[in-house]
Image (cartoon, rainbow, N blue to C red):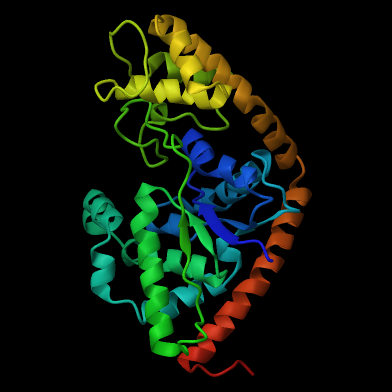
Amino acid sequence: MPLPRVLSGVQPTGNLHLGNYLGAVRNWAAGQDQYENYFCVVDLHAMTVPHDPKNLAAHSYTVAALYLACGIDPHKSTIFIQSHICAHSELAWLLNCITPLNWLERMIQFKEKALKQGEDVGVGLLDYPVLMAADILLYQADQVPVGQDQKQHLELTRDIAQRFNFLFADPEQPVLKIPEPMIPQAGARVMSLTDGTSKMSKSDPSDMSRINLLDPPDLIEKKIKRCKTDPVRGLWFDDPERPECHNLLTLYQVLSGRPKAEVAEAVREMGWGQFKPLLTETLVEHLRPIQTRFAEVMDEPAYLESILAAGRSRAEAVAQTTLGAVRAAMGLSRPL
C-alpha cells in the first residue's frame, strides 16, 4: 500500500520561530517514515500582504535551509519552492473560475487582515484560500497538517474540490482528491512572549514576542528576561488566569522532553528569577544543533540548490499530472 500523501508549507516572511517549529516542522520530521511528504516554501502566499522584494528570494532559501536543519530528510521528503512550479498559479486561476465570491468573503483571516491593511488590501489577500486549495489539490494530498487558524481554509479546499468534481468529473472517477485534516498534537500551540493569549506569529511587529530558530543565545536570554510574566510565587500549568505561566512552562516541558507531571513538581515552588535561566538554557541547547546544521547548509549553496532542484522535479511531475487532468475536465485544449 502506498503511504498517505501529506502537503504542507511555511511562508518565507523572515526567520521561522518556535511556533512554526513545535507546531509544524518538528512534527513533519518525526512523521517522515509514515507519509509521502511534500513540503514547500509558499513564497506566493507571502506576496498577499506588503513585502520587501529585495528579501523574498533570500528568505525563501533560508526557510528551505531551516527545513533541512530541523530534520527534514530530502531522501524521504520532497522540498521545493512554490513559485518554481507554475502549475500552482494556473490551477489557482482555474479554481477561481468555479469558486463563489461569497465563499471567500466569509473567510475570517481575510476579514482580520483586511481590517489591518485598510484601503491597501489587495485581491491576493481575498484569493489566498484559493491558492492554498491549489497547493493542496495539485498533489492529491490525503492529509494536510492544520492549526486552528487554517482549519477554515482547509474546509474551503474540500468544498472547492467537491464542487469541481460535481461540475466536471464522473461521480465514479473524481479528478480531485478530498483532503483530510491532520490535527497537530495537543500542546503544540505556542503563544507570544508578550501576550500569553495570542499565538506566536511572524506578523507581530515586535520581535520580542517570539523566539526565532536562529536567535543567538544572548538574544534568547534577553527575550526571556523581558517576556511577560506575573507577580505570583510558584509556577503551575493550566491556569486560565496565568496564560503566560502556562505558555512558558509548556515551552520548557516540550523542549526538555520531561513529563508534564515531573516538570509541574519541579517548578511548583519556583519564582521567575529561578525559572527563566532554566528555560533560557533549555532553549539555547535545543536550538544549538539546528543553528549549527543551518550554518553548514548555507555554507554549501550548491547543495541547497541541488535539493531544491530535485524537489522541484519530483513535485512538478505530480503537479503537471493533476493540472492536465483538470484542464481536460474543464474542456481546455492541449498545448501543441
